[in-house]
Image (cartoon, rainbow, N blue to C red; front, side, top):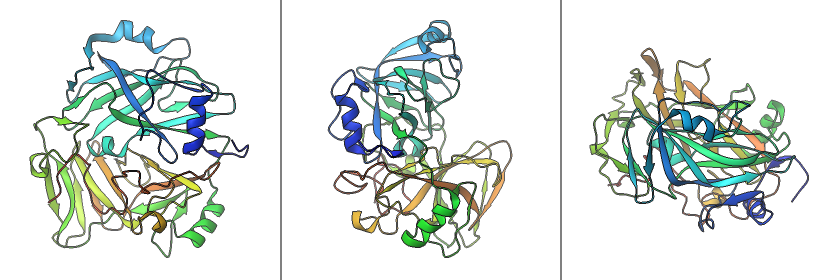
Length: 362
């Protein structure tokens, strides 16, 4: 493994397993390791809890579960998780990280596009989704379906983990240099500030510009591909030439960026999930973009970012071209063996506006 700072690539993640820095209840699935991340699998039991929580510096997650758990759910045969409820599931993967290696987690793209709110919790944690260098212990996933009830089971993958050594984020001047060389977003005048490069919303045209999640739908099996009719779960949104969309409070929308996104092979990117400077809404639950996303050599020329958007307390008007989030780029420690989209069964390479893999196209 290279000594320089950066995000660990697929072959280095596999090496973590060999050196017992990554532990598993059962062998990894053949496609579980991604170019710059590892999918995390649900364990055998879920616990319905009264409310979300953090264990704090003096407690393990299991200590809090003893007090806050309302009932236990067997996931070995599959179970329905209801909207508006909070569940905690121990994951099949655990960690024994060296002192020079930290990690962060995020929902998978398909998880975000179903509006399933997930966060990873560690023992003694004081924040979600951040795993400190040297952490040794179990991993737990908080799950709260927001729009659709879902069926999950042991082995379902809702979240992913990214490992890093040192500080790998590109400074703004380096980001500008990289953009000029590689065209990170399809814009001649990129907005680079706050450590990231801006993405804006595409609401132009007369046709389809997005989807709004319906209420009181049937359940969605998170492991079933192309199994559901779009109109049973989503209301299509037509642009009608207005170039704007009013976000209703607590409604869930699937929209798309105006710019195509490119993540070169030696870099990884992450979408900042919420920026209070651009409006009272949250954008993109699933923030990891792997090396090769939108890269022409991996079949992704022109891949735009699909955005999961939820307004909060007040209605908010989005206008075409309005900035809705920023991409932060990090160095890879080493090149990945395979890029995103290169024979990996990647569902969202070369995408435009696209729902999750669970829905039938056409």
